[in-house]
Length: 445
Image (cartoon, rainbow, N blue to C red):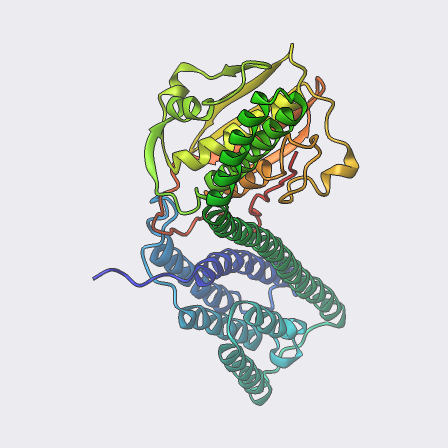
């Protein structure tokens, strides 16, 4: 029987709770030792260290129980339940109560550290567990009030204790509030990127439907118009009327252009849903260069070992996306220049940089370039779908596309593709929440 899924939230929470408890144990030990010095040995040091050792041993057990095989790519060996996190926090409240009981009870200035535990519970746990911890803290402090032990704390030491307690509580509250704010901002960034990708994929799917319907509905009338224009051209040539014959030839050419546009739309959008297939980097590049013009020339800078590297992705869709980017670079470059395609392998990612020698992209155009049917090319040279389709395909397989000005003039297009886009079993990484997810910057050219 397969083990149950481990919620990412609980797994991250237990990691951070364990780290916080180490800091908490160190702070408790330091406070007890400093207090013993300030109070000239009046504290029950043995009992206090025994209570702190309960937290130390419990955290060691927590680390071994949940993180004993962390070396196995950060994958936990046990399911993390929310009730386990709540029980650990209940133990922390009990330890805090024991320390307060031995050092002045309700008169100890560190008593409002209960609020830190409650604030932490609000972040880590659902409402039902949080309210249970609130109730436990309330009962624990009530016990301190009921069993008030006579323990004289000098006014100067009490003031220092209140000052240190205020600093500790404030630091913990600010730290976790900042973490919450950062996590929410990161989550919002991820949601924005996901919404943008979903919108582009939806447009791509709509384009596929539109292209299929248009190709089906228009193929017959366009074929009829082309045939009639050809017959008309022949008839006009017999009557020695070259001007009208040229008009008939123009009609045929425009009909051919319409059919080419439909074919481009159908081929570009038809890559939606293409199945994965194994190939090498060299095979992908060869397929991407099919149909590329001879001028400007395209120079490929690819190490020999990278050419033989294995890939698993939708090859027709990705190669067509790369072909579109190379063609755009050729369109932007003068005929006597060279378009450079630089390919490198970086771990499990394939990076492709396409450099042109064109005039670059005006800032006022960047905001719209990449939208479907928006183009800066002359009429008849493009219809504004190439970059839109390329970006949709690349991001659809988990890659990224970035565009910026090249240092030597022109534009650089950076494509980053995973070498294997097959679905994998999700694993929990041991990275901290402070490591933000890399954002995808997509600036179409």
